[in-house]
Length: 560
RNA sequence: GUGCCCGUAGCUCAACCGGAUAGAGCACCAGCCUUCUAAGCUGGGGGUUGCUGGUUCGAUUCCAGUCGGGCACACCA
Image 1 (cartoon, rainbow, N blue to C red):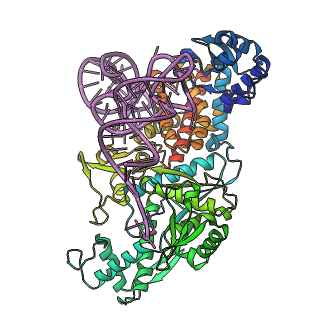
Image 2: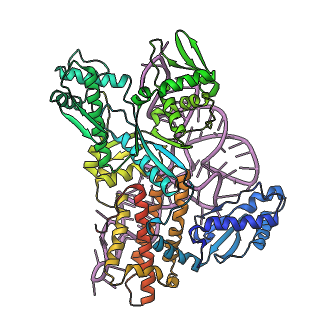
Image 3: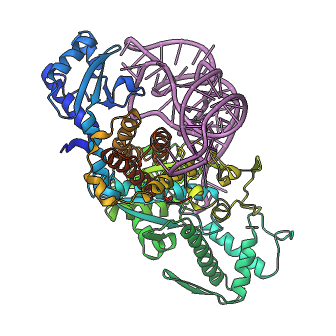
């Protein structure tokens, strides 16, 4: 059977590259062949704009060149009709038989359909969420969690060896602040009190921690065991307990959100393990530092920063960016040649500094390393009104609230289904609505519908992969076949662009194709050959919906 | 003031690194359930892609400027 099924696009690109070698050998190296999916069916299944690109350097008319390319195109069982259109587009139509073969491919590969080898098994780390342990996770963290997790699933499917990492800033001023807030609560001081510090954390959860501390509660998890001493004068003990308490809370939230991590890194460990000191020594040795006004500075302006940064303050402490550099140096030394940091856009200014710091080490770290995916802010809408989030005031829309209120599936979908670069409006009422307004159900419904049809058929699902697919000839079937063919390509684009939302849009399109097909045709018909072919097609569609939803961490119910 | 992100239908968003007539959903209007799930389908109206220039066969996409929204600009993290 046809083996090029899983990737017509690159197959065709290869054919045209060969044709290019024949038509314009001297230009072959400089021209990249790109196959597009035209928006309109009349323009074929794939289109190539190569002839127009060549028109200028070859000083020939695009249509002339197009004809020459077509004449030079090697034969392929996949290629049906080839046409020249418009200014010089070459439109390629795939043979029906080749399209039909995708069904067998999907059914045989099952959940592995869509796996590609972009990463070639190389190590890759995605750091995401990395919330400070100073309060509950809110919607913004939720977006980071959803996007980061989808990236991990996507990159894994694209052939990378993915490590998921969470970095805890459990040292520094924010934690001192947390400690003080809890301590004051222990002593009965409330945020309303004039003595409450300006920067104190005001949320009710601070009081919960204080009560638990006084009650000498224990935090038990497989990664930490901390028991409160109950001694409210012991700031150290309060800090340990507070951080442990909030880590546990965040962990429970993430668990409810179906997010897991492979590695938890603690900022405090960078100090105790001597990694901060080691990084500082390396930076000094590299010659990019200097002393001024009693502080130690790094000349980050040598590496694109707009001003130099203090590394060691006059009081002897390090600024936050030093452990950041130490941390990323550690990532590099752990062998991650590709690292992606998923963060909120409010942290964007650290990018230049971290990269500059790593460059200053002079140890051969590439300039643009690591990669960043920054998601923009999330605003929450309830009853048509914006819900303000204020950490200080303790007013929150927590991730837990959202999961409880609108469910894990809908929350994940809404947070991951948009381009990270755009500000996101999370409409709680919309996400909650179990109606056609909600795109999650639209996709899940397609899956449930297919399952319903299949369960009313008395044959064996395993046999469908061997069915004769030649009966799949209707326009609806062609569209659905082509959509299935597009799936691996969609994974590649989404993984390359670090854009998980593309999966969500693909799934909406796939579900729409199926729903149209469903309304236009019957599957359980008398003609055995037709029936098997159609059932195979919808079974394959269900498989791809399942695969895609899994990338988003959303369930594919069999009944709704 | 400086840097980063974004301006696309009434609303929420796409557009496969420059392609052909800019697409979906919601909302609105008109249809489709005595046979596989109507959380569905079919059709219709709705746009100067914020604005002005530039680059070229061709611009929502690239460049410059401008307006608007968001974020960030510590010896805080």
